[in-house]
Image 1 (cartoon, rainbow, N blue to C red):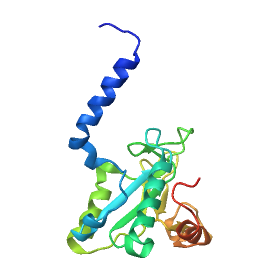
Image 2: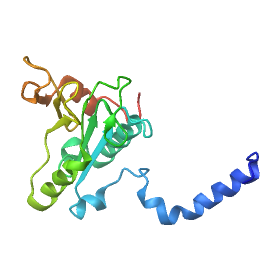
Image 3: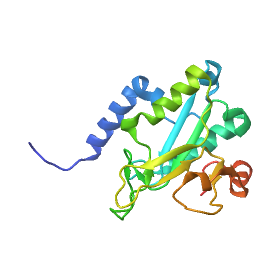
Length: 188
């Protein structure tokens, strides 16, 4: 195998190859916030983003969601077909995304098909997803469970054991109202 320096000619050819493939793969981009056709076909979307994802920065997903809200008429018209969840402490692929290897945060457990069950319940049975109780992957050092709430709601601790989701209801909040009304798409 020959290793060399990547020159501008190589970069240009790589870009041209990517542009040529765009017609095959362009439909999977998140460039277009207009989901009108998707919504009209009865589409349902559950968008989950790990805040500690080391491969996909969560700010890009928030930016896209904000652009969808702006394009599609705001939360009331979007929330009936598109739910967006942020998961603190989770890394890419449902892992502990914290610097503490013993943190054991509650995450989405792919092997339990939690998201698949949520989506099929919504599509096939009309059960609109709300708060989802996440559990840690193991009980060591301690098992944890917390609710995951669709934006623009947030979890609020109201007393008791912080690791029990019943004491952390999701509710509309001042932060959620700010998120819906005052932030311009992409503003950080």
